[in-house]
Length: 333
Image 1 (tube, one colour):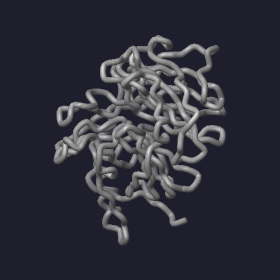
Image 2: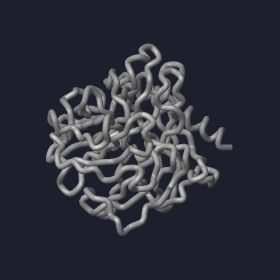
Image 3: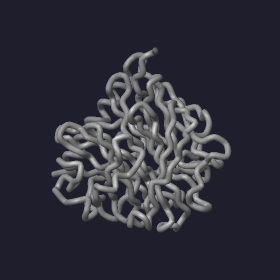
Image 4: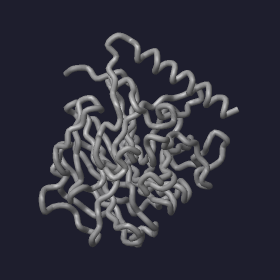
């Protein structure tokens, strides 16, 4: 039955896109929207109305990109001043940042790790008054050994009712812990919880209506055209789970719904950003993938529309990366 529902939804969505694309004056966009190595994107719409994206460290710093429309992105520099890039983990890179606006300041969370260094990996944060930085007041929150979670990378923060929660993990379980209300410190008086199994990394949580949705990536991220990355989701009535698929099977046992897979044009599509809205309240998501025509260029950043079906489940585009689509609606300011 689910297969039939998915087919009906896909046909409906493609019909809507086709109809919209022939409307007079419809603006189109083409993927990738960041046409260079820009993996693990995180995005925020700032107070100035522009969107800012941050990706895994490149050329010694965390790149920041700025866009007025989610389509045209300009690289505006690095998150940290020269000589101030965090070095808490020897020889480590900064992976998979996460940007949030908490109590009047921009807080950038980041992973520090080396390939295979799962017990030395850890998570830090830095703050700035502006989305373009510079990010300062860096602090290393914990490493894998201190927190007791192997491969402690891929941090994201979920905010609700004035409280901040850190979600993280990579193929050793997805965990949740509470931060102080300003998001700057780990609360040691609140125990951490495991909320998903060992199939996942690159997770984040969205609340929509009465449901909490746990998005994550499964498969291999970084093997070029052999990458098998997919974006998946489960949902729960509680922030703390259990998160389940349509059949009620738990993500703790590595069950989920698949949202996005690679195809003959893009491989390894996954590690999605937060969902952001345009001025028509349409929802969009960034993610990375390998362009089959230019695999050695690294993981480029792609953009797709997020749709919701009548049963409250999300869909990303048509389930594979969009080549060309209707652009986000942005009003002139």
